[in-house]
Amino acid sequence: MIYFNGKAATPRVRVRAVIFDLDGTLLDTKEIFYDVINIVFEKLSFPRLGREVLVEAAAEGEFNWDMVLPAGLNVGKEEALLQVRAIIEEISPPLFRKRTRPIAGAEELLKSLHDAGSKLGVVTSSRKRHVDMKMHALDESGTAVLFDAIITADDVQLKKPDPEPLCECARRLGVTPGECVYVGDMRVDLKAGKSAGMTTVGVLTGFDDLDHLENEHPDLILDSVASLKHHLSFPLSGNGGFVVPRGAI
Image (cartoon, rainbow, N blue to C red):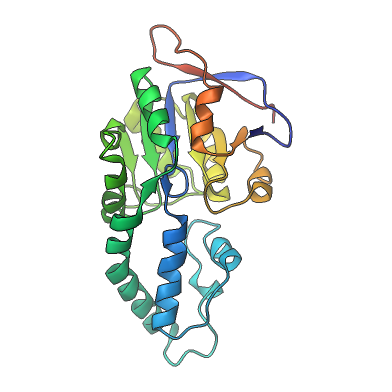
């Protein structure tokens, strides 16, 4: 199913590169994130948090710990954060290495785009060391090596929703932002994509729901990244570009 402000999107726009968010868009890691936070809070004897609170804490890019740390801590906030981050660094690598899987249909889409000559990129707010431990999920299918540029939090000064990481990815791909589609699962992705001047596609396989994505007025909202293949037309001869539907904003 395809959404754009509740209507089917029919106009078309040419693009030369498709850039993806990682977690919740290409990789099925949502449950791992929830489990990591729950394990951390259990170890520190903090009250368990609801998922909506966690999503809202991450809604603007930088995780807002003030929203989730309990009142009346026995230690100061900075000390509590040091404890939280130490546990995260301890438990995250084995969990993500063992449980990270591609979103169903993502690998087939990446192969199709690559074979047709499209440039491929990733823009994520994760650190490079964390990205490296997740990308193994795409190794078996040979799709991890198909990306022409991967932008992590270590590559730029500002994170999404600032457009800097997306513009840097476009620069490395050798295209203009207006020739790119950016695909993500959170409102922060759509804000960044629109600020960068890219065509924006929201997917419902990650952290934000349909209402939150619709509020950002993207060009498309899809059930998952796999559905994007149904909205790509044939490559434009000579430049590897595509045409995709675009809603009139």
